[in-house]
Image (cartoon, rainbow over all chains, first blue to last red; front, top):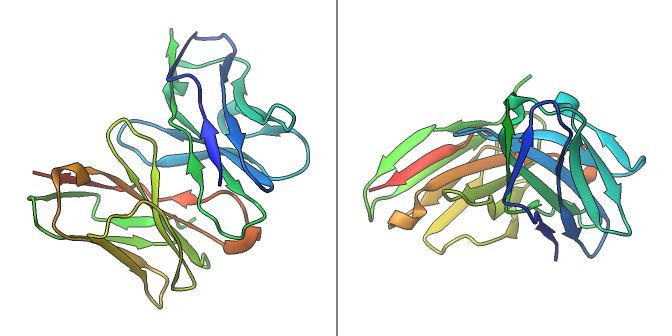
Amino acid sequence: AQSVAQPEDQVNVAEGNPLTVKCTYSVSGNPYLFWYVQYPNRGLQFLLKYITGDNLVKGSYGFEAEFNKSQTSFHLKKPSALVSDSALYFCAVRDGNSGNTPLVFGKGTRLSVIA
Amino acid sequence: AAGVIQSPRHLIKEKRETATLKCYPIPRHDTVYWYQQGPGQDPQFLISFYEKMQSDKGSIPDRFSAQQFSDYHSELNMSSLELGDSALYFCASSLAGGREDYGYTFGSGTRLTVV
């Protein structure tokens, strides 16, 4: 079984400052990790993924995430936040050893970037 | 590029009525997933299909059923609707087995309101 924890319901950051949205995971096999963003009344938009390779993954809109196997973490980061980054962010995991198992999502973290 | 198409976008039903939600996956994708996202909640996995066969089952109520057709589109049938069924229903599609693992591509969702 797999699970995702996003320990912060809300993250507030000033525009121009770096942001971090935390995610830790638990999976019995090989972790495939994802970040999605959701704007109000919209669908889930893919940001980035870690499947294999470099632990630092770069994605859309200047976001990046670092896979840390020892800490079972996959925190989302951005060097300089924009007001337009304000949204709901979901971390998700699936077991890469198990074919097409469904994604399991965290509870989500609401990011608020203040001008 | 073609995306995942869901219809209808919005649906209002009364209690005890039935509803049918449709999902058209990205061409060549063979796996479809259904998720339910209640207000302020994370997406919860309902059910998935691979090559027209059910592959995984999550927290789908017995009142709900789904299938994938020969053209790979999927339908989620919901009967005896309850107020608590009001949610955003997402469909996602992918290629199975990690052959093209971008996570999944999500549709924009169907917002079901039960009154």
